[in-house]
Structure formats: C-alpha cells, structure tokens
Length: 248
Length: 333
Image 1 (cartoon, chains in turn yellow, orange):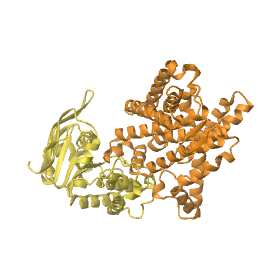
Image 2: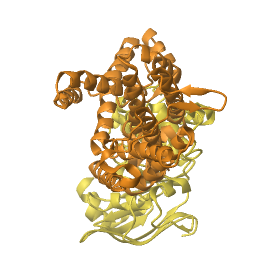
Image 3: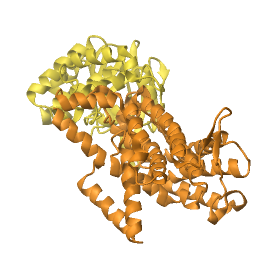
Image 4: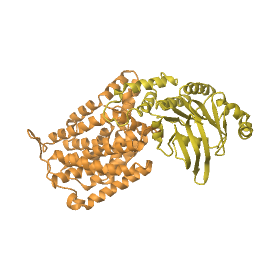
C-alpha cells in the first residue's frame, strides 16, 4: 500500500518457546484511525509493544515512513514522532498534572539543561496548559496525578503522549476499566485527535471502534486473521467465527 | 528552606502557611545558608558543626540519586573517600596548595563515579544497590592496598593545612570558626549549584525517572544516560564533601571508604527527609548529635542509633524535615 505511515514485514515475537506473534505483515494508512482487534491472547498487546518500540521483535522489520526502525531504543521511537499511551495507566503519580505534561513536552525541546530554571521555558508551560485543556482536564493542573480518577488519568496520559508532537499516536485499550460515561468522553477525544494525525488503537471491545475507524486489523492466536474496512471485517466469515460469535 | 520535590510548581494551598512555604521554597538556598551561617553558635562545639556541614553535603549529594532520581546506591562512601584521599594525597605527597588539592579530590571522585555509574546503571532496584556496594568495596580494597600512597590501614596522616593562603589574605584554619566559614563557602556554592540543578529541566527529568522510568522513556528521554549524568554529579558532590573532610580532620581514616559510611548516607537522608531539599542537612545534624551524645554515655551507641533509625523508618518515613514540611502544607491548605 502506498501512503502507509507504518508497515510491518513478517513481524514475530517469541518468549522462550512461546510464539506470541508470528509473521505479521500489515500496512497502516496515513491519517484516521486503524484499530487492532482480536480476542484475549490474540497477540494485540505484543504487537502494540513491538510497533511502539517497547520491546524489539524476534524477527521481521518495522518501517516508519519508509525508514527501517527495527530495534531502535524506545526513546528514539518517541523522537521520530511515534507516541503511545499504555494499557495500564502510566503517569508520574507524585507530580502535578501540569508537571506531568510539562516534562513530557520538555523532552522534545530540552533534555540536558542543568542550570536554567524550568520556568525559563514559558512555551513549554503554554503547551502543557493547552494540552491539558484539550483532553478536558482544565482546572486540574495543580492536582497530583495520583489524585485523579481513572478516566482522568487516561486522559492525562494522552495529553502526555500528545506533548511529543506525534505524527503517529498509539493507544493500547484507551477505554480499559472505564465507566460507560468515561468511555464516551474518551471516544469523543479519540475522534477529535484522529482529525489531525494517524491513530492506531488496540481495542478489545470491537463495537466501540467499528463506527470510528477506517481500517481494522484482526489478530488471532498471534497471527494476522484479516484486515480491511469495517464492512469487510463484519462480512468476514472467519472473523465472525473466532471473534464476533463469542463476544458480541 | 525546604522546597518539596515539586517546588517550582508551587503547591501547598492558598492559606498563610502555604504562601509561607512557597516563599521558603523560592529562597531555599538563602535560607539554608542563613541557618548554616548561624549554626556554629548553636552547635555544641565547632568541630561538630564542621562535621555536620561536611556530612550534610555528603548526604545532599547522595540524595540527588536517592530522593530525586529514585536510585538507592550503597556505594557512595567510595566517592567520599576518593575525594578525601585525592585531596590528602595531593597535599601530603604532592605538596599542593589546598585549593587545587580540593579540585584533585573532586576530579578523582568524579572519575571513579563515572566508571562505577557506567557499570551500575545497567541494573535496577536491589541489583543496583548490590552492584554499587560491590564496586565501592573494590575501590576500598584498592586504596587499602596502596599503602605507600594512602597509608593503608592507618589512614592517610599529616594533611596539615594550618592556613589557607589566598595571596592577599591568609585565613588561619587553626581557628575552628574560620575553618567552619571557609568550608561553608564551598558547601554554600555546592548547595546553590545543586538547587539550580534541581530546579532545571534536567532536575525535572530526574523526578520523572523516579516517578516512572518507563513513562520517562516513552516521553523520549534517554533514561540510562540521564541516570549516568546524575550518578556522576552525585559522586562529584560527595567527593567535594570528602575533600573538605580531609582538610577538616587532617587525616583520612580508611573507614571513610568503608561501606558502613555508605549506609550512613542512607540513614542521614532518611532521618532528615529524602524528599526535601534541606532534609539531608537535618538528617546529618540529627545523626551526628545523636552519635556524639550517645557515645559519651555508652560504647554501644550504634545499637541506639540503629533503634532510633528503625523507629523513624517505621513511624516517620518522610523524615524529620519531611514531616515539618508536610505539616506546614496541611496548615496552609
């Protein structure tokens, strides 16, 4: 596929003797939302960890904008423009909401300034405030991250991911453990974010993403089962058998 | 004079206490120095005041890793010792002026910290603690064996610096009060630089790593390199403390490098409050005054400091100064 922002070629991951992922070759189009779905144990999170750089693959290649990024250190992925939000909430618990986002924004701008005051970078403060407002946390700036509700922490994490100015944003089950109300808010946010950048979303709940994404990738038992538009996936007999039939 | 870790973000309520706390956090260097400048007049005797100053700096340097970066090192005695030996050897065997001798001590400590840090930062948690402990014992034995240079078991003797000659003036270090203030100039400068470091963007990265290493990495920070830089700076500060201690004591006992000394850094930081700027000094003062007082009463003083330390860990984990700051904050909000 031309215009692919991210492409994997024969991507695989073994943990000891266990093959968590085997020979997955897919291309993610630029813009919009692509969802990775599949039943429990399908290898979604492993696949996510590989394409977000959290762990290196055992075999295969990852290409980002045509550039081979296989095996790069995790922080390099972020600097290239690939940011992620983890499945388990992953913030800086004892720092304020503001400082959480500010330090995330700082990574792009200044990493080894040992002498000037942090406040000497007002652009970072402004960026942090804007992102906090964008994810709906305005007014919470001075609260500690650990004092936030679960849904708010997830929103905070997305603000932190956005602070890296990503062209590609990876979200691992952004609505995991959320109330229906929080889930709706989160999905609205995802929709808004996708207007300006490419999103790849791992999701367990297929219904949630069907009306949202342009393309779906279905994993099953560590291998690619199907890919296509939501309509194609709905019509796919194989997918219905392993996935829809059971959980829908 | 405190500044919790989130000092620049100015937390702590809107009440009077909160405002006071924010003001204090902003002027933490000035307040720290003011207290230290008046300190010899309240300390039981001047030599103890110098001890507290020097070991307070040692605990402060250690706390950059422990309280701010979240790395528990059990090897910082190596840097304290390297600073002391470096300075002592430069004076005794090299006949150097005290100022370049201090620089030599700091450089030696920094180099050793770079090597130890390079090896240790690959590990985490208990493995990091054990690696630093093992490496510091290697350094200990190396200095122990180099007897012609270091005096071996007897320690390095004869570091006589009766006066600090600065060209126009000569400061008589024999006068304990003069010695205190000369050392305070060094400690004060280090405290000021240290405070700048903590308030800097780099300080923010250290906090981020302490809070959540994975997230810091995901933000785009090179965690390993940042830790190494923090480790080396921490070692350099402890090296300066050692260098000053050598001039203060006129001798470098081999125990300076012993791992028990590494343990004392942990104790002082915890007693005072590892999450506060001023805590390490409070911890050093508490520890040394306790030691001083108990040692005159019983030869088993370590038993009692140990018990007090355990009580603190169990019942006041935020430390003396940490508790004071927390109370002020509560009163403020």
